[in-house]
Amino acid sequence: MKAAIVGGGIGGLVAAYDLAQDGADVTIFEAADYVGGLSSGFKDPRWEWTVERFYHHWFASDVHMLGLIEELGWSDKVLFPRPLTAVYFDESFYPLDSAMAVLRFRGLPFIDRLRLGMGIAYLRYIARWEALEKFTAHDWLQRWVGKSAYRILWEPLLIGKFGQYYKEVNMAWFWARVKARTPNLGTYEGGFQAFMDEFADRLREMGVDIRLQTPVERIDPSPAGGLIVRSKEGTLEVDRCLVTTSPAQLADMAPALPKDYLEQLLGLKSMGAVVMVMALKSQLSEAGIYWHNMSKEAGFPFLSLVEHTNFLSPEFFGGEHIVYVGDYLDVDHEYFRLTKDQLLERFLPSLARMNPDFNADWIRETWLFRSKYAQPVPPLNHSAAIPDIRTPLPGLWFASMSQVYPWDRGTNFAVEIARRAVRGMLSTRM
Ligand SMILES: Cc1cc2nc3c(=O)[nH]c(=O)nc-3n(C[C@H](O)[C@H](O)[C@H](O)COP(=O)(O)OP(=O)(O)OC[C@H]3O[C@@H](n4cnc5c(N)ncnc54)[C@H](O)[C@@H]3O)c2cc1C
Image 1 (spheres, helix red, strand yellow):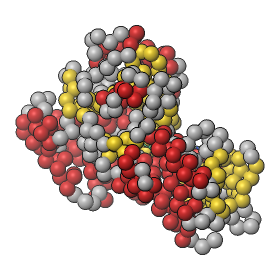
Image 2 (cartoon, protein in one colour; image 1 turned 90 degrees about the vertical axis):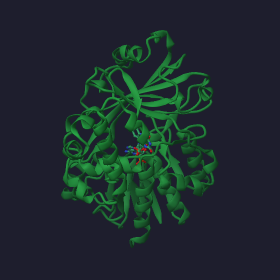
Image 3 (spheres, rainbow, N blue to C red; image 1 turned 135 degrees about the vertical axis):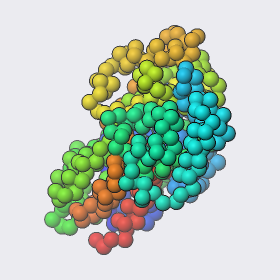
Image 4 (tube, helix red, strand yellow; image 1 turned 90 degrees about the horizontal axis):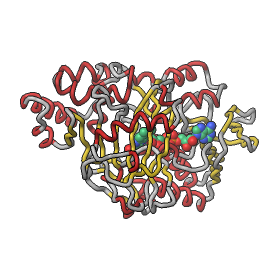
């Protein structure tokens, strides 16, 4: 079998691995000049390890991702520290990632804390999500976990992640988020990019042709029965093609898809992400607290502040302290147009609010990353709106973040859906 893969993110790489193991002749087309897609990283010359462009970690429950690493024989390079995740309340941050911490949280009356704890325990206990997609998280959480807990803990998060759509997000998505999360968070020795590069090298050894800086422009059915994949390098005729880009990019690339399927692709909503990475001379936030959920209501101009070096030692980064500030936004939000310096100017007062000793001299360097496709939005009864991974064009398959529902997007689910697509590609007749 001759196969093309569009996208060299984790989904595309694992699909190539499975296809090549089955003896297929595989070509990966990747638009960027690096592999890894949204979970890629970069490295400053002063650092030993790479830093992800968008903050990334694994959960201990990420069985598909960790299983893949085990298959590759690299499990000894996975680290699982136990950093803290904290929520902003009344000018302080409260780590709320254990039952005891929730019970001690002084922002809520004791009875509400108990109700919150029981609500989370219930969501973790139940195994099926289907009935939950008929309710919005906004309604369900207020009803069952309580209005105060919702207002202090979950509403800021939903607003931060989904903006104008926050009241539409369904409860199955929320269930999946609670279900899959673990307090221990994982990474790879050298950062996610080290893993991606080692994986790409393994694929090359297996004979996979990885073409960087080669965006696919069009995919058409071939009169001979397969598909014709067109890039700046010309055309490649293949039996099967897996696309791992956003739904809108697939619709653009493959106009021969039937109208219904194209409409389904274009009907999916998602949010973009804007993330600034900073290399600082000193530690910004309290030791041990890695992830800070901020509150826009309290005036912070971003959703998360993530101190990477409260998760991993600064010694991997030349002694520097690495801090991300990030947000999920509509793609027409001004943060997609402002320059890096303009954004930094907006963010500086909040950094001083995190630590009164902070001043702009602490910042050695900043990097800005933006993605227009970062967080799919799952409204009520969303399962009926998900496009099939097997598209109606013979031989063309599609595996994206928008189809891993009810799970929230993540490398773990990118691995699962890509491997599922490959099983389909291999089992359908040519
Ligand atoms: C802000 C943020 C934080 C996240 N945090 C986490 C986390 O902590 N843990 C976790 O596991 N996951 C996290 N994720 C999710 C994770 O990054 C994704 O689920 C995963 O990377 C998706 O992999 P993929 O291969 O499906 O897609 P992508 O990584 O998006 O790969 C698609 C690839 O296609 C390429 N491409 C696009 N158009 C073309 C074209 N025309 N031709 C060729 N190539 C093309 C792109 O350049 C890209 O490399 C996060 C995502 C974001 C945005």
